Structures are given as C-alpha cells and as structure tokens.
Amino acid sequence: MTIIELRAKIAGGCLSLCGKLPLGWLYGIGGAVSWAMKRINYRKGVIYTNIARAFPEKDYRWVEDVADRYYARIGELAAEAIWFGGCAGNGNKLRRQKVYEYVNPEVLLEIQEKTGVMAMKSHCGNWELFGGIYSYVDSEDFKARLPMDRVFVAYRPMRNKVSDIVFYENRRAPLPDYAGQISDSRLMRHAVSNRTQRPVYILNADQYPYQAGHYVGDFLNQPTWGMLGGFALAVKLGFAVLYMREERAGRGRYRLTFEIITENAKGQDPEELMRRYYALLEEDIRKDPVNWLWSHKRWRK
Figure 1 (cartoon, one colour):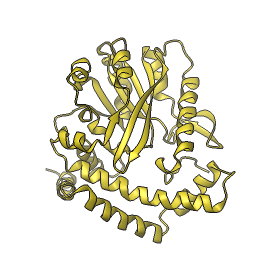
Figure 2 (cartoon, rainbow, N blue to C red):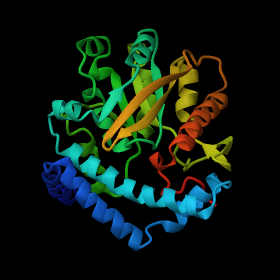
Figure 3 (spheres, one colour):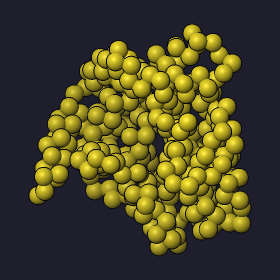
Figure 4 (cartoon, rainbow, N blue to C red):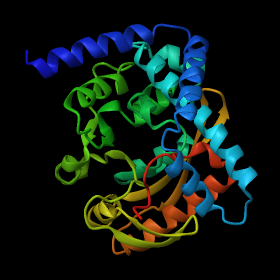
C-alpha cells in the first residue's frame, strides 16, 4: 500500500464514521461550518460577483440575501455528502430519506430501449450524490429494463490524489460493487466501445472548459464558453440527449426530471444542443438561484 493509499484509507474511514451520524446532526455541524466560511469571507468575491452579474436587475440587498442562503447551502451540501458516505451498502436508507425522487423515469426508460443516452446534469441539486443514482429507484421494472451495469456517471478527477480516492469511494458508498464511475478522459473510448449496449451516461455539463471551449452565447447575462464533448459524442454515436432537471423538494430532498433535448442527435449541430441545455439550465437557476454552485469560477475574467 502506498502512502497516498494509506492516507486515503484513513481519511475515508474518518469520513465514513462521521457519516454514521444522523443527518440532522450533520446539518448542525454544516451550519457551523457555513457560518465560519462566511465569517472568513470564503470566496466572497467570486460568489457576490457571479450573482450580481447574473442578475444585474436586482439590488444589493437581494444579492446579499441569495449569497447568505447560498453559504447555508454549502454546509447542507457537505452534510449530505458525508451522510451519503455513511450509507455504505444501504440503498434502502437513501430511499427512505427520499434523497432523489424520480418524477418521470419512464422518459429515460423508453428512450434507452432504442439508443444510448447522454443525460446532462449540472451543479444544481447535490452532484456528490450521483454515484448512488441507481439506489434511488425502488422499482423492479426499472431495474429489469435498465440494469445497473449500463448506467455510468462521468466525473473529473481531483488534482489531489488523496481527495480523489476518498471522494471516488464516498460517491459509490451505498453501492460498493458499482463500477460505473468513469473519468471524463475515458468517456469517449468507453462510449464508442459500448455503443451497442445502449448505455446511459450522466455528465455534469456546466463546468468551465479547461481546454478549448465552444461559445454558448449569453448565459446568465454573461458571454459563456462550454464543453462540447458529451454533445459531440451523442451526435457521433446517434445517442439521445436528455436534460436532467434537479429541483429542491426540501432539505435533503431533490426531484429529478428528465427533459428530452433530442431523441437522436445523429446529424445535428452539437453546439445547438449545448445551447439548448444552457437555456434550460438558466431557466432553472432563475427559478431557484440558491440551488446552483455560485462559488466556482464559471467565468474566468
């Protein structure tokens, strides 16, 4: 065992132990952490600037109120992620909590019976909980029609090797045998190799593109560049493209709705598909501004 693996094992064990605490207790701890983050002005410039530029029609009090509630959300997101890691091998615990409720799973089921799917999500809801996406449905029909080994969640590896190992394991804790987490660098090769199996890929599509990006247009009142990879791959393979809407249904509870962008992307313009995704995402953010990740540097300027 390497030093990195040993450190990851220790850190992961501590995280898993904390995850055994009741979710209400973790929310209390998360609230204290949120208070401290606000006191030390954690990414204050990024948060306030992002919100103010996205909503130029709003006054400072409104921006400050959204920022205050967003700081509280940071603690909630962390609490939920830690609690999630404490659900090792216990998908029933997630279903009882109703962490994610599928509003219209039939949309996904019907499309994936015809072709592969690129399901585009965002930094709404709690993206750290998607390694357990197969645990949220208590339906034998769903599982029979869409087996777990055809559902894949793409992720971007962290630069810190210890954190990368810890969070990789934390994200699949309720399903320890789940091997469906795929590094985004492996996505193209994996999709091409498995195209005939009608796989379902779940991707975060709203990150800042570290390499050459493609112009989206104005997103939240700002010129924006996006990642085209998932959309271009859907066009190449003739996959469907879905938008995954993640709404807050209460503390620690989210609703997941599938909206069809296209049932078959073959021959279509991937940039247009990407712009339709961003239009849907902006609509959701404007409905519930606190539900998005304002503390990341989405616009590098």
